[in-house]
Amino acid sequence: MTTKKKQLRLGAFLPDAGHHVAAWRHPETQADGGLNIQHYTHLAQTSERGKFDMVFLADGLAVWDRGQGKEAFSRSAQFSVHFEPLTLLSALSVVTERIGLVATASTTYEEPFHLARKFASLDYLSGGRAGWNVVTSSAEAIAKNFSQEKHLEHALRYERATEFLEVVTKLWDSWEDDALIRDKTSGIYFHPEKLHIPNHKGKNFSVRGPLNVARPIQGYPVIVQAGSSEAGQELAARTAEVIFTAQQTLAEAQEFYARVKGRLAKYGRSPEHLKIMPGVFPVIGSTEKEAKDKYQQLQDLIHPSVGLGLLSSLIGGHDLTKYSLDGPLPDLPDTNGGKSRLQLIKDLAQRENLTIRQLYLWIAGARGHRTILGTPEQIADQLEDWFVNNGADGFNIMPPWLPGGLDEFVEFVIPELQRRGIFRTEYEGQTLRENLDLPRPVNQFSKVASPELASAAI
Image (cartoon, rainbow, N blue to C red):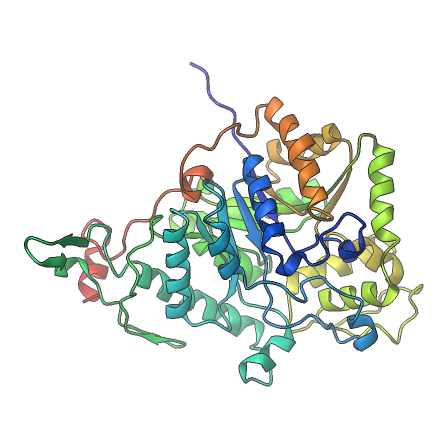
C-alpha cells in the first residue's frame, strides 16, 4: 500500500499591480490594475490554471498616505485605489470554478451581522469557495473614516475580534443545513425547529439574529488569520484554519509553526486543521543572474520618499524624515499598530546592521515577508525545504509585478513542484474546504452538536 505524499498549499496574493512598492512603474505591469476587472479576471483564471488553493485580496479602509506629504503620496500607487474585495470576488466567482476566494474584512470596523451576511452570500455565489481573512486593522487613519478619533487599543481589538467571531459563527448556524425544505404541497417553507435565534448579548455586541441567508455551503467560509503577535496567535489557535504569516529563516518558521500548532490541543483541535502559509516574494529567471537583474530593475524604480513612507507605515507610523537615510534605524517605542511586523523589522535592522535606506530597499518588495531570487528549480528547492521540515504547510505567493510575476510562477514553478509530487495536478474537490482538506463545521445549535447550546439558542 502506497501513501500519497503530503501536499503543500498555495495562495495567490494579488494586489493590483504587484507586491513591489514600485510595481506599477514596471513596463509590463497593468498600472490601472486596481480598478480593472479584465486584469483581475486574468489573474484569477491564471491562478486556477495553476491549481492554486485560493486567491487572496488584502484590504485597507483608508488611503495609505503614510503621513509623508502630498509629494511622496502622489508617487505611491500600492493599495491606494482598488476595488472593494468582496464585490470583486463576487464578480470573479462567475469566471472561475474551483479556486478559493478569500477577502480581508475587519472586526474593528465591520458589524457581525453585516459581515456574516456578505460572506455567506459569497459562499453561495461561488459554490462553496469563500474564505474570510480576519483582521483587527492596524492603521490609525482608518478610525477617522468611521467617526472615531483614535484607533482601538491592540488588546481591545483582539478582545472584540474574539467575540465578533463568536457572533458570526452563531449567525451562520442560525439555520440547520436541512432547515429549508420549500415544500409547495404542504405549504411549509422551513422546519421551525431547525431555525435557531442566536440572541447574543456580550460585552461588545448585542445581536438577535437569525441571519437572513441560509447556512453557508461550507458550513462556515474558511477562516484565515494574519496576526502573529501573542494575541494574534491565540486567536488563530482558537478560530483560524489558515494563517498568513511572515518569517525570514527556516529556524524562525519552525519555531512559529511549532508554537502555534502547539496551542491547538487546548481548544480540542488537530494540527492538520490549521494550515500555516508564510508569504513568499519570488523573482524567477532562467538563471540566477537573470532573476537578480529583474529584481534590481524594480529596485531602481523606487523613489526615496516612497520607500521611506512604506517603511514608516510598517513600523507603526513612526516619522523617519528627520533621520539620515544612511544612518541606523533609531530606537523605536511600541505603537498601537501592528506588533509583529514592527518587531520583525527592528530585529532585521539590528541583526544585519542596516541603514534606513537599506532597510526600505529590503522591505520594498515583500514588506517583511521572505524574498527568493532564482531559477524555477531554486525557487522550488526553497519552498520544499520549508515544507518538508515543518516550517510551513504551504505559501502565500506574492508576485513582484502583475500579471508577469504570476504568469511566470504558474508556467515554470508549478510544474517543478508537481514533478516532485508535492503539489496537486488536479483539484481534489469543489469547495475550498475540500481542497484544503479541512473539516466542515458541525452546526453548534443542532442536536448532534451541543445539547446545551441547542437549548440556549431558542
